[in-house]
Amino acid sequence: MLKKTAVVIAGIFMAMLVSAVMLPTIADAGSGQDSGQDPIKLNYANFPPAPTFPCVQMEHWKEEVEKRTNGKVVINTFPGGTLLGAKNMMDGVIAGQADIGCLCMAYQPGRFVITNATSLPLGLPDAKTGSLVLLDLYKQYKPDAFKGVKVLTMFTTAPANIMSKVPVRTLADIKGLDLRASGGAAQILKAWGANQVGMPMSATPEALQKGVVKGLFSSLEVMKDFKFAETCKYATVTDTVIYPFAVVMNIDKWNSLPKDVQAVLDGLMDEQAEWTGTYMDNHVKEAIEWSKEKQKVEFIILSKEEKAEWDAKLTSITDKWIADAKAKKLPGDKIVEDIKMLKDKHSK
Ligand code: DTR
Image (tube, rainbow, N blue to C red):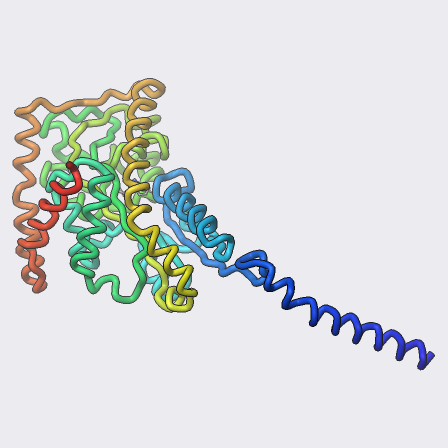
């Protein structure tokens, strides 16, 4: 009995010895996943539902990162506010509740003052231009608001338009109308005389359904992605302001990443901004076609005279923003001038 036990123990010992000798050879055979090392896992939180553009860009980024790091990094995505919601995204990432988070900066105008200047009525024509302008502005000013995080990319929506259950053809039609908008765009609806109701996009489907609002102000891809075209049979084309977004990472997590992984993520920053802007612009066109053909939505084009009246109501918004920025010791005039210059540069 004793002899048998000794043989078994010796056998186990031999097996351990063999595997210890073999291991370095296996580890030498490859890198990343092949080495048998556990991949670096990163959690990425997003607030709206999976089919919407902030989540589409998230899945695209995940694929690119996993491909370019050769499996060394795995990204676990959490759409639909399952890890962090629209309003606690930034603080949740700072606290480490998620490694990465996608936030709509326009929902917190007082917190992201400089980058939110891109949502002033300055005529940014589309999401691609908006995204490149925003990213350049961020790099130029490196705002304090991002001190506690690593910025991975930024991008914007296409310009906002009115989607509503009732037709809005004139300023008289919009007067007192309950319309949803959030952040910077809220002042625009107010300037046009609407009764502005503030809430993040993720809360809008329910508000529309329950009749809390009669419509919303946003980029038009939501007509298809949230199926708003089923209830909002009118769209008034104002092409007014874009909404800026940021993707941020917990700073300690960033600092813990190997240099080669950091290089891959940094290398994606500009590319991702351009990819997302282009995706958004194309998707808006698709959503318009779908809304017209399948949902019989009427697209209302304002006459030149009417549009001039609408635009005239907005001129004081930028002046007020500049004055407020100056009060916070920020160079408000220069920021606005820089956005205009960057717009010319990127819309060529
Ligand atoms: N226009 C902003 C941001 C926005 C536009 N499309 C989507 C889709 C999902 C979430 C946010 C947004 C807004 O109205 O909230």
